[in-house]
Image (cartoon, rainbow, N blue to C red; front, top):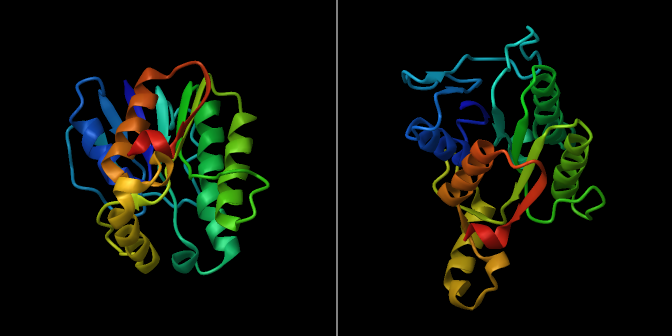
Length: 209
């Protein structure tokens, strides 16, 4: 299969890229990024401006898109900037991919995503999910992790504190509240992209421990 991977430089995206390039079922990966990636014979990694995405017909053509793009409020600096990265960019990419005939789209979303969620983060993810459902992909999968476990290039203090707490409580926590390892999330994203099951599917955090 041919895969488009968006967010390949992030914690989960890095794992998706490594798994995809090691998987014989994946013939090639297109991973547009803002910063260069190491070369690989099956990887095409053009640097792009996400505010000015490539519009050339056929540029996004593939069998599936995995979107692991995202930021935090602290890094983004404002609600508007966060919404642009976590909602507007993925939605714009999804529309271009669908225009180019891509049948499958897989999103790394979040636990509790809902368009009427009380928290801005969860609400943004829910609004994105709702918008993606309206596009008309043959196969659409939302993977909803809780706290993601793994080493980030830019550590997040809140995640580190919560991670230590959840790790200590792991034996007694319900599956849905346990840490979700980044590599496990990545594997679910990739498998959903390869399988491309018809319809809309949700993988909740309890399946990611």
